[in-house]
Image 1: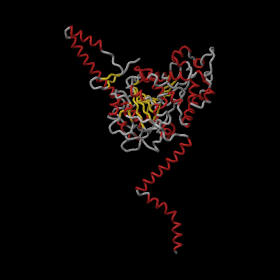
Image 2: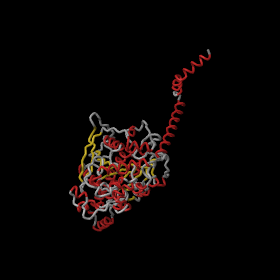
Image 3: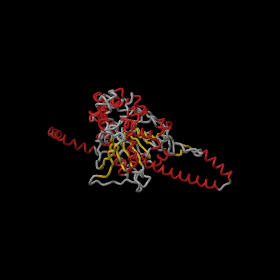
Image 4: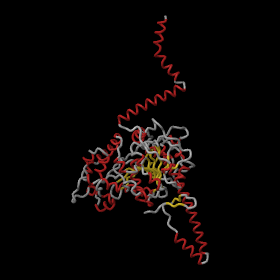
Length: 538
């Protein structure tokens, strides 16, 4: 009898085991232990995968303190975003008005893993493609074409969400909605990260337009010339066209990853003549030559190089006469590929009697072509010369609008945070850096919390950028009102001086002669606060 009961118990044990496990998992302590065990097992498996793919799991970074030029609130911890900049009135205003800068820390593993965030944001993220675009093909002065995709509405059955505050679109300090210009990665195309930003900006009332470089995203290539890393000529003409279509709207721009090379170069070359009110760069490449020469994990390097080669192979016959296409397609590094495309030391030497391919195929005169492109009508002599004219921050001192850069220390596609040009952000009032411990490349996923409803619908960087544009617009509007009040007071003093005796009037005129034109920045001797002025450098 005992043996029969024992055998029956052993037979029922497999079926009773799930019941016992279900009862055990109802206990909070067991649930906590189970989550920790699953998390530890998953992390161990992920570390093994990273080792096989040669992906870094822990990245050495440099600790940046307040003495290094960072500004933070009293309740900010070391894991929260840090604003590194010159302590100006605009920086203090951003800390007061941009609530996202003081939000809880970004997501931890697994959602916060830098490689998972990077892959999801650039390649395989889940994005709602309900937004429709209409394309303008802009003919450039040298005969090239860039594409401008305007967000025009939602597909049938999709309703527009309202996220405006006080019935006013973010970034809008005029009656016309602002225009948001988006600049994608160097290899082109709409990433998941960029599509999410388009959706969120459209929900908040922006006119959204995406600039596609020559020969990317279905844009036809009409000249035997691709866009160099830091060549802002195409962007300059696109900005002029957009501004002519919406002259009463404020124009702001956001770049993604390697697209920052064009945006930063444009801001430096145009100076105060730019039509942009403010700009932002998410995971920007601030030092182009360092980025091309730095060691990148093989899987990312291979993907970026593959996309560039696919772009070149589509127009292989067009480039046969101006460069060694076979050599470019055999390149094993981004540096060699870029050098082969744009440096004469690695190209086929053309005979003097043979006209350029662009002149033969498209009827462009060589003189007009050279006049339009300037020094870029000819390839650079060597690698160093190429970066003398294409380094993104080569004219950083000429930038005349605020630029917000959002970077992460665990970005797997960029050089370590120790290479960031912190001196630029500490000395130049127009450059602001938001540095986070986590975020990957164009990822910046946050922990899912109920109090952050607007963040759950997009990336943390998107919320920061749109809040930043609104804060800058409000700040400049306040500065303009103060400037008008100052002009009224000056006019009133001038009227009083006309009614004064001649000797008194002479003294006033002498004081006016000593008045200097406002520079880029000036400090009030009374309270030491930064007086924001737009520089006129060009």
